[in-house]
Each structure stands twice: as C-alpha cells, then as structure tokens.
Length: 296
Length: 272
Image 1: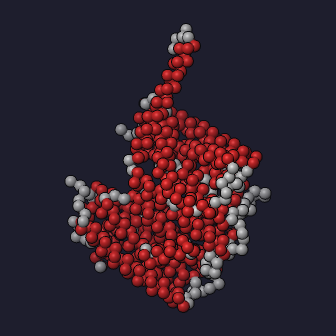
Image 2: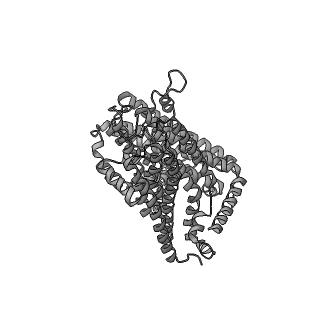
Image 3: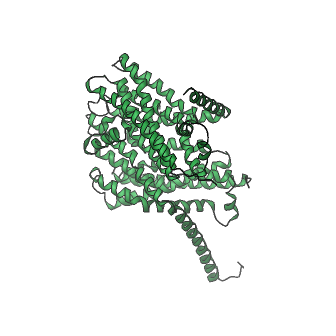
C-alpha cells in the first residue's frame, strides 16, 4: 500500500484482508465437516460404545460404597461419583484430540506438511479449524447417546447449579478444548526433532489418563504423602495442567470449586492455554526452520 | 496335530527373530504395556485405601482381588500374544484380497489366520501377572488346596479358549462385512466387563447384565472362575461355575468354528 493512501482506503484494505481470512477459515471448516460426515454410521456406534467403560466404573464404585461404612469418599457421595464420571465424559469430549499428535508427526515424517508451508494457510490455524469441525460433527452425533445416558442417570446428579456456575462450566470446557488442542499439537510437532513420537504420545496419554481425573477424582489423592513435608500427591497434580482436561469442569458442575477459588482456577486454566499456545508457536517456528522436507 | 504344532513353532520362532532384530522397539513395547498395567494397579491400590473389600461380603478384599487382577493379566496376555496380532491383520487381508493367498495353502484357514503372528512383548504383562499372583497368594489368609492348583491352569486355558472364540467370531464378522474397525473397539469394551468380579454387577441393572454376560456371552466366566478357584474357598455352589466354564469354553470353540467356516464359504475375493 502506498504511503499517501487515505485512511478510508487503508481501512477498506484491512476489511478485505479480514474477509479473506474469514473465508479461508470457513473453507477449512467446511472441508473438514464434509470429511467427518462421510463416516457417520461408524461414528454413532463408536460414541455409544464409549459409555461402556463408565458402566463398569459405576458398578465398581457402587460395590465399593456397599462394602465401606463411609457415606462419602474424598467428599464424593455414591451418587456424586457416578455424576463425576459422566461429567468427565463431557470434558473428555472437549479436551481429547484423537489422532492429532500422531497426524502432525506423520505429516512431518512423510513430507506432506510441505503443502501447508507453501500455501497461504497457517498450519496451526488449519489444524484448529479441522479440530473444531471434527468436534462440531462429533457433538451433533454424540448429543443423542449423551442425552439418553444422562437422562437415565438423572437421579445421580445434584440439582442444576445456578447460571454463574453453568457459565463457568461452559468456559472451563471451551478452555479445556484449547488446552488439549495445544498440548497435543505441540507434542506432534516434536516430530521435527524425533522421527517417531508415538512412544512420547503414549507416555503423555498414560500420564494424562492418570493425572487428569479421568480415572478417578483427583481429590482422592489428597493425604497421600510425596515424601516432601507438607506436600501430598494431590498438590503436585494441581501444579500440572492435566486436571483441566477432565477433572476441573466436572468439579465445577458438582460445586466442588466455588467462589473466589473458581475464578482463580479459571484464570490458571486460561494461563495454561496461553502457555501451551505460545509453546506450540515456538515449536512450530523452530521446527520449520530446521525442517528439510523428507519424502516426495 | 504334530504337523500343526511344528508349523506353529516355526511361526513363533520367526516372530521371535523379528522381535529380537528390533530389540529397542521390543523393549519399548514391553515398557508400554507394563505402563498401562501399573497404572491400573495404582488405581486399585487407591480404591483399597477407602474400602476393605469390593462389594459387601463378597470376599474380594485386597489380596484376593489382586489375585483376580493377576489372573486377568495372565489370560489377557496369552490372548494378546497369540491371537490378537493375527486377528488385527485380517481386516486388512479381507479388504486387499490377501486372504486368497491364505485360502489356497494346504493348511486349516482358521489356524493360519488366527495364529501366524506371535507378539512376544505381550507376555511381559503375563509374567508380572504371575508375580502378582504369587505375592497375593502368600499374603492371603486362605491357602488354596491342591485341587485348586490343579483346576487353575485348566480354567485359565478355558478362559483363553472363550476369548479366542470371540476373536474368531469377530474375524468371521470381518470376512462377512468386508471391514469393521468398530467391532474391534467393541471387543475391547466387551472384555472390559470381565475385568471385575461378577459380584459387582447387582441390582436392577446389574442383575440382568450379569446374567447376559454369564449365560449368553460368557465373558464373565473368563477371569472370574479361575480367580475364584484360586482365591476363595471351594465350597457348595462354587463347583457349578467350574463346570460351566469348561462347558462354555467347549461350546464357544465349536460354535465359533462353525460360524467361521460359514463366513469363509461366503467369502468372495476382493482383489483382481
């Protein structure tokens, strides 16, 4: 743009640029939506089956409560725990990114990432758009089995919380989506340095499954000593980002985190999203600089 | 029979040679499966922080329950090592027509398709299972009688046979449908039910589920029967599940064989 352009011309130029960007985003989203909808039968079946492990968990905890004289375990009553597992399913529906890290590292390994390097498309944005599309289709299909299961189990849930809590719950879910996305994308981009990231991804999944609260509420780790005075295992887990990808939103809905603590926790979650987004960018910049395009 | 055993020996040797060629990968796979397992054990240890037993009056307190878990590890590791790698390849073979090459060989197709690959790294979990079983049994108040020690290996074999029959049925479904990734996921979720004592499935939903998974799809007999024989007293009614597991294993093997043969008869080659 020439230096003597009028402010209006500059503004309309920027608008046009914005419109182009939006159009690119929309196209990326539309492509991915169509791709996902091609296998919808498989999708519905897969979603419904994901509830089966919860069924065994529910029976297991019911049996545990039947054998113990306690009315609650780490602050969770018999019904709370069922509600907790169901709610972590919702959180995982937002934060889990199946195939993301593996896909990124594969495209680095086989050289197909070149296509994004020469196109006027930012790869991270493309991945994000693809994920949003993936998730939108998933929710459209999954809402049915989710609704059925939650309706059947409605007696396990405490009364619906107030609007502020629901808003915090939704915010924590959206942040958990971003956190999960940036963590896995960063992991996949380690493929610029190591050829095969699958073992790293596996280790990540393991840690994530154990420490995110997916397997059990993190509160149960309170009081288990780490060997450092005044610090228990639950404290260590709270210093890590994993709890925001399963435990935290569920705890918000169940009213385990309230008031000022809730605001603080949401801020920490947002901070983790920013940290991971920046990490993802840095890894991308450094990685593409050393990338030497393998494959034909 | 002798011929098949020697052919299986050749397969196993070839797979061992292959695994040992990529030793680092082999070790990594062992570590991987041990990782999942230790995580589950940590979870069970955590559960026993809060309760003396699983289900009131079931007898599944900490040590017997770990004997149960060990039995599950042993059975699943055998199935994972001997049958799953071959079964997973079948999906691709049906789609690409590789199955044709198997069918023209002068060997039983079911044998070739379900046993040509052995994944030795899966035995790692089984070994840990044996160690865990020994640990649990030495710490238990109850010492299993000699008859329990005799029955245990037999019932473990029955458990493996039942799971093997499911793998064969899934393979038959793959041949009929062309391709079915979801069915393998279903396999994973189905075996999930066998991971806990049958007693936990009680109440208005659990009762029918338990009946379904015992009498229709005998998945609950796989781990429960051998584990109960070794970890709990063999009195009165305890004999019926033993008889049931042996009968179920025999029936499952026969039925899966018939289903598999029917499926093969309807197979039309995919490749040109």
